[in-house]
Length: 166
Image 1 (tube, helix red, strand yellow):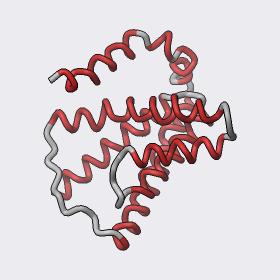
Image 2 (cartoon, helix red, strand yellow):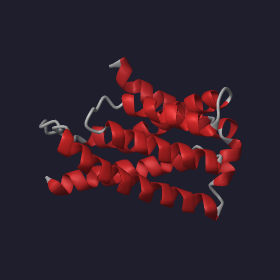
Image 3 (cartoon, helix red, strand yellow):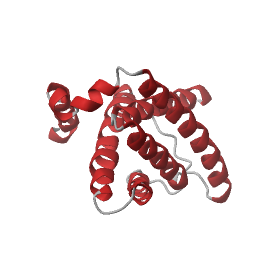
């Protein structure tokens, strides 16, 4: 029970102190170029992920488990997951790695961590690709909101396409 409310409590903390935690990044959302980067990173990530998943499904058997999507799971996948994953993989890991190595290596390592956190061998390359795209746009924009919002859109469209397929 307690573990189920932890993400909500963390999200409330982030919302309450957002101006202190993300002051400059918050200001970037008012710029048109930031919204363009969100759009481009979403389009690139969605197309690249789709291609890589299609290729990897020919070499690895995708799991035959049908995932039931309850409303709370959808809310978690679209809202909570992007915030936590991007804060951990981009804001924390990528920034810490950047102190010790260059951008490309930092982005690649954080993308590998992002992929491993999904526990999906079939989707491993797809998740690495997503991590690289979102890491690149995070560094380019200097705003964590670019990968978070792109990740929101990505998860929303994945769930939407899965629900249409049945």
